[in-house]
Image (tube, rainbow, N blue to C red; front, side, top):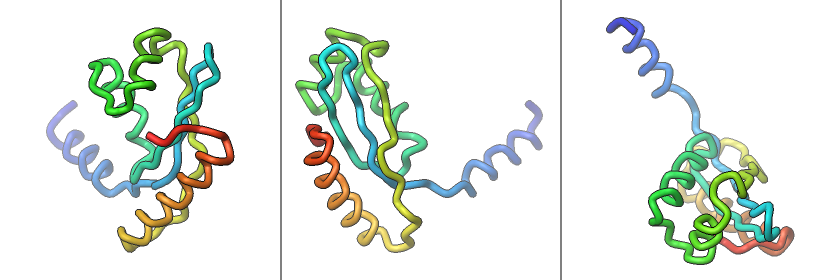
Length: 111
């Protein structure tokens, strides 16, 4: 990739819009579910898999299940994508409310 192509790719990446929403993880072997909220659904799976592979996830039950069943034992699901909200505090409040809703509906543990 030459310098000009690299600059164009970087500019395109910076201009993209992040989609906030609710995601879920499901253990295929046990049926356990976890739900979380993210300001950018496009990046959260990579971040989750990285922290779980490194053994540094803050949720001990999820980390233990990951150690037992590995990455092939889990499914990542996008549960709900929120409409674009320009005010961060409104978006954060919506994410909290929707996460509580989905934790009781699925049922799932919040992460």
